[in-house]
Image (cartoon, rainbow, N blue to C red; front, side, top):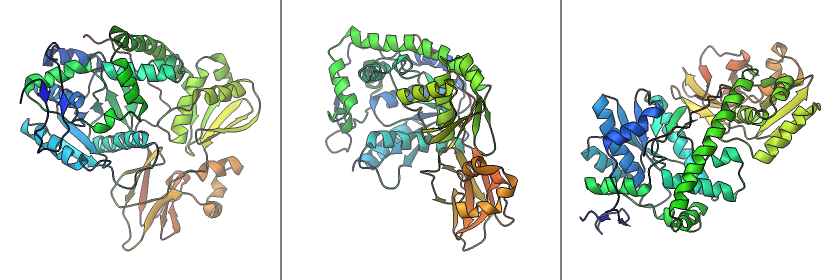
Length: 448
């Protein structure tokens, strides 16, 4: 195998990749440690690895760094099951990493796959599976291999969509999802250097053919950027400048959110006077509240969000809906509760913690034999059992959005509403990261 052609032989399942990297410098462990240090990795670390050049280089560099300082590290691959070759490729990655002495887990995206929006659905499933695996294994930080070329592509895509300054900040070096921190130490490193690093080590990688499919917008942007030269690099530099602006806005929103409360019924309340005191930060603070209360991974669309903020700031009373939330303005206060739609019903099994509605983690502890347990929203016909504890229609609507335990169709428990069952316990807790605490993550200035 030559160092300019990193590929599997024809009898192997991986796809070939031609790499002209002779003029590129490799990324060494010392430089990688300097890139990682500002991100302040804590405790055990996971690395998301697909088998592509970017994530394979990250995994090897991170493993060497971890061995040097005595840190526990593991690699995690998600097999999305979208291509016939995916299982064999995950096995190939496992064999490569086992040969390098790197612990590795393969997680599989089970169940039906959507017909449209497959990339977004796969990305959401990937983070959900990795987040759950990390929480189960006591890991709080996940390294992901987004690099400078990815940052330039993201910046150009958002320019094309007309994103504001916040969107043009592109990917942050530190973010949070599914209760874990996502750390991106390679945002200043071009892809060619990562490929060169693997070439120097004689480490093959796998190419996903969907990355070259012109049906996808990112693929078309990637092709366009190849002829941009230094201008493409400048996009990533501009993204960092916008990132500094985003950091300032996040800090201001964090101050504003200190005036908010989040009660046992899952309702968030904010005084309108606080929103009026900082009208510039109000939309960002509201976006965070809507994301948490609505159980969403992303903030609402900017135009709709600004309309909602303008309506609240104008002091009009009434109710509006956005992002699976109902927002009520009354007596100088904004109240945000979960809408009564798209609330899931899931089978419950003993001792297994699962996410529910993007808001809570639920776990059944103790169960009677031969009973079918289900966790779903409180049914309207069961409200009379509990209504004496609460006040009026607003409380009822909020209560009906909370998880309840049913056994063979009969209401057994609604822990947040004070209804408990002596034979079985449903433990309900906020999903990690699903709190009103808005932590502004630093824009890291990395060497390289």
